[in-house]
Length: 128
Image (cartoon, rainbow, N blue to C red; front, side, top):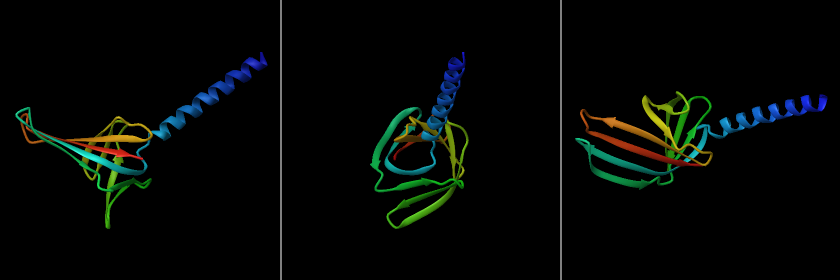
């Protein structure tokens, strides 16, 4: 009986520890590299333009103090960010959807609407 109780306790401890590691693994906090940015433009619901550009060496550092520091070459910018949930992050007042989040990569999605079915979509693809 004691062995069964001990085994149950160890199993519970391992399960809780693994869950915590998984949550930490999927954190946005830390240093990311912008792999590429995809852009799609829709007019009246019809795709009218699209493009993908490389990240050009841009890094994004989601710091623990709620500051996002972006660097591209010698240019550095700091803006506030707030993680709203596991699916949304607010960066400098803009709400981004968090998509395809793994330890090694994540896509941040932004939709800018201009009325009706006219809007732009941006996919910022980040990697560790």
